[in-house]
Every structure is written in structure tokens, then in C-alpha cells.
Image 1 (cartoon, helix red, strand yellow):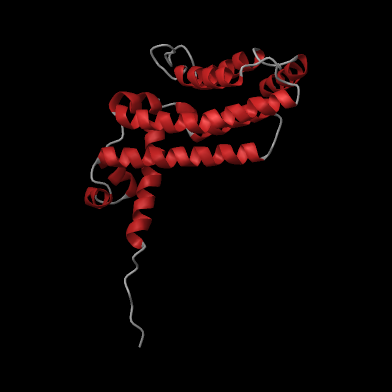
Image 2 (cartoon, one colour; image 1 turned 30 degrees about the vertical axis):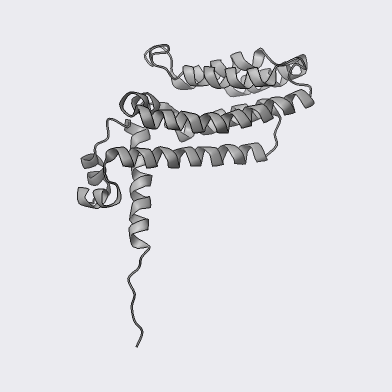
Length: 214
């Protein structure tokens, strides 16, 4: 006769399922818009089950943003590992992030900043560390390949890229009614690259832009 022990992994599985569904709903509808009732109804579980895994919504949002950040960082690392030319790499990263965040149609970062400022601040700090290393590496390889101008200040360019990239998500400066997130990111990326490319790099950039418009 075999003794049957309880499956201790079940609570962890439920927690992961809640995180996955919550993250998807937050990105689709916004961090403020989605309530615990909405999440429970969507999953077909009780709110008691959610609160058994997450003390409150703030805890849930915090863990969701951490998980989303890790997933995005992992995706960016995979793109960088392909070792494509630096210009193409930036466009691939943009496409991945925009797709992952569902083109930010629900303005999740704006809602996160407005209603969960501490979580937003922590997320930005971690985001900066990831993006800074990525962009510095991108610039250095672009210099080595002769597609970025040799007189660039790498530290300045990497930081101004991050600052501008985050600023275009500010709805006070770029209201969604006037600027679509996808077009805004394309315009920013072209603006950034045209300021640092050599004639060789400009040719690559134009080819990518033209192929994206087809």
C-alpha cells in the first residue's frame, strides 16, 4: 500500500496561473481598470483564492510587473544573442517589446505611474539597468562595424536614448489621441539612429524603414 502525499506544488501552480492571467489583463485593460473581481470572474475562481496567494492588489501588481520585467529582459537577451547588425537589432527589440506590451493600447505604464508610483519607480530603475547595458553594447558594436559615427560619446548616447524612450510614454507630452504608440516608437527610433549613423549605417537604416512600409 502506497501512502498518498499532498501535492505541495498546487498552491504554486495556482499562483503562477493568477500572475499570468493578471499580467495579461493588466496589459490589455490597464493596471487601474482591472479589479480583483474582474480577475476572479475571468479565471472562474473566488476572490478568496486570489487573496490566499496575494495579500492585496498592490502585491499582485508588484509581482506582475516584476515578472513582466523579467520576461522582457529575457526576450531582449535572446534578440541580442542573435548578433544581428546593431540597427536591425534595435528594430527587433522595438517590435518584441511593443508586441509583448500589446502596443500599449491600454496605457499600462501610464496607469502604473499614476496609481502605483512606488512600483513604477522601482520598475524604471531596473529597466534602466537592463536597457543601459543593452544600448551601450549596441553602440560599441555599431562603432566597430562602422555604421555608427566614431566620435560618439557612448555614455551620453545610451542615457539620452533611455531618457527619450521613456519620455515618449508620457501622455502629457504625447497624448494617445494625437500619437499612436507604435508610430511614436518608430519615429523616435528613426530620430535616434539618424543622429548617430554613418553613410554605411544610413543605407541599412533606409532599407529597414522601406521594408517596414511595404
